[in-house]
Image (cartoon, rainbow, N blue to C red; front, top):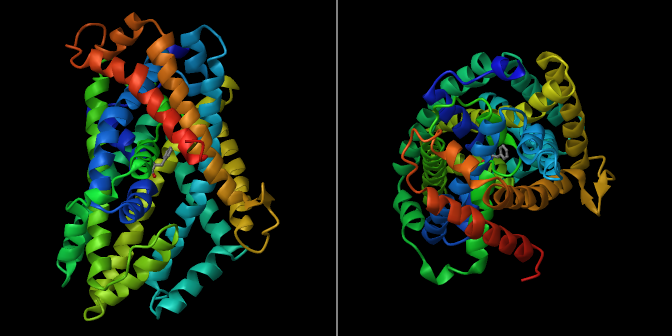
Length: 453
Ligand code: PHE
């Protein structure tokens, strides 16, 4: 009975936009540009695209297969397909990872809301020292960032309680095209600045001298994070796909959208930064300290344009963060709703309130309550590190082993070809990637980041 009642996305475009919404997030607009900046520009981009095609997309298809076949939340999905064997733990790990990321992702999302406000009221006008001070004093304030974090979670909550079709799908259909239009407007404005050409050529002319193992591993990690792989989001969304959704084609389309947005984000940031001679900095400072400076200096002759661009940028960032946060929230909401047999609304209330507490603790750990530490690091950094650098690769690795080696190939093929109604082109190539290429590469990244190889 539960099977028949389960919600579904209503259209093909809804599937693509919702899943692409999960993928397109702060990772594209913030992390990708600074990784590109640090890794020599175009060469990194080419390797990144290779990683998305050869590793990211096969992993995404694997999560699709598990989610759609089981038609249940991530924890139960692994249990169902393995007949209750220890593989169930991989599903639980996915839910836990999604839950923890929701808490700290909401903090950075809240910062974006504050910066919309700051752009509107002109708080970002000032010299570079003032802009840096502004960010430091805001992010360390014990109250303000928490208010924005909770507000962001409440907005996410309001979408989630409207359900899969009326909430997630509808919101994605509205927000993703808006995000794309905003991105294009800012790219055009940035590329028209004097001296923008240097930024564009940095982005597209590869510096092969910079290619090394670090760059390759960085690109691989970024592709997984950016495609939201390894933490149950993709699997949960796939459980709402229809039997007719072409899994491989959808994964390719989502991968292409994700890459396109990341490259456009680079085209928005580098030309502007190069035109005023500021080097694209790393870390949170890129979007909250460097860019306000860049916008201000680049458009100093036309302050009204600078004002609009800065405002649009933070609206864009908030939309990107919101569509990702919705998918993270949904992982835990679907889990509580189905496993604890409580209503979807109550499940969402529990997730929103517990994540508000986690978010508040993470935020406080950056400021006055810097005693909120684990392993000598602020709680915020611990969450980021543990989820992104440990849980995510482990989840991705085990998922590949599960689909490539454990589930009968017949089941995998049936899902891939929609029970033989599709050609199943590239099926053997896909299986080869999932069985060998992906697990080996993930292990390499994992060991490399701990300095073991
Ligand atoms: N893919 C998102 C981004 O690029 C981050 C994310 C990770 C979202 C995991 C959901 C789950 O920002």
